[in-house]
Image 1: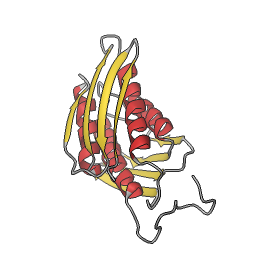
Image 2: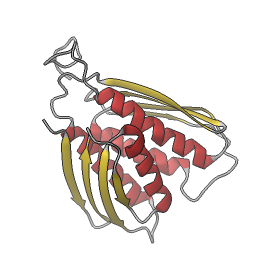
Image 3: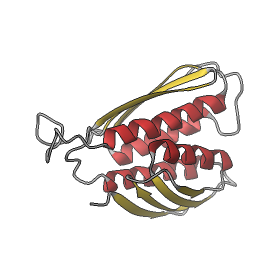
Image 4: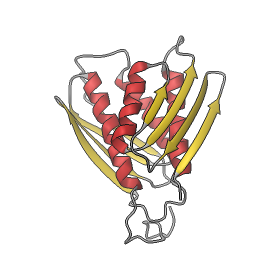
Length: 196
């Protein structure tokens, strides 16, 4: 069974199409017209081994927020649709990724209970055009649409680029782990309730 999805979202602010294959090789073709964001989505795809084609046209002349948030919504919906009934998957995933002076950890529960915890250092010494709080908006939209519990904790770091990059790499790796099958689970979901 192919675990893939195609999602299209059109609003007065954005026009986004995403095609996601959870069982890919990390191939990606991404264009949001926000170069740094494109780079982060490529890292997510490559480190999660997800095939991702994504195009977004948004009102970036106003600001990046609408495009970044709506891409989070679309990508979360794609994950939710592609993973299907969640039978046989590990459900939980976690990864820590170093990036020079930064260490970021991501933990995921594909729980059907959307929630985001987002902790980053308070004093970032090298801010960039794409700030860490814009990344937070992406992950909030992503977690809500994918119906996952998502904890992001950056233990330390100073360079905003490194902080965001370590988060996106950890996100890909943790999600790949959570989506991986375990034959011991069989044709069930990993829950004592029998449902997620």
